[in-house]
Image (cartoon, rainbow, N blue to C red; front, side, top):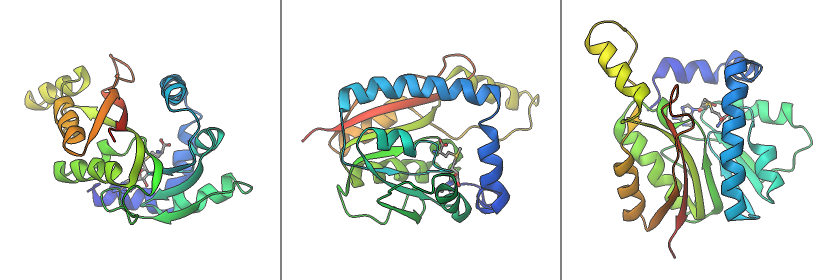
Length: 216
Ligand SMILES: C[S@@+](CC[C@H](N)C(=O)[O-])C[C@H]1O[C@@H](n2cnc3c(N)ncnc32)[C@H](O)[C@@H]1O
């Protein structure tokens, strides 16, 4: 689960406002550009889709992009203020719906949407079991495609964080990571295959962005 104080921050009305402001910052614009470059490549394979779950949706940063690819989008987030913000930022959007839920307990039937899309949630989930359950839920509710990010245990950024913490040079929490092989095994066990999982940036980021497809 996301740490309670972080969850409360996101859920507060200022939480949504602050996250919206984040995207005026240079480093966010840079990572946004890189994410879009990878996503364009993924959608060149996926083509048009009819529905997508965007979880966590935040203020809806990816909703227009998913809609451009044909999808009716279901916007979902733990934070009520984020879910409300989507309607404020995009008042004319025709959505499949908006809902509050946890990333590891998705109240949808199996294979309910064509694509399950989860950008920048996994690394907030402090409990490794919850991180795994989140990905298993994405595989369960998606009919054909899943796109999600996670923080790689073997990334340079994580290794440096672990080392600095051990040496007493950093008081920051350890990163909430997953192993690349662990994610691949989870995919295989659920009947999925990972088509691509590059790092967002090799230096300066430990996030991988996964494109996965159901085998049958
Ligand atoms: C870094 S933002 C990412 C939002 C969006 N995907 C984006 O890339 O702009 C993380 C989001 O995860 C939501 N969140 C945090 N913990 C969650 C949980 N356990 N289940 C569902 N959503 C959660 C927060 O409310 C926040 O909107």
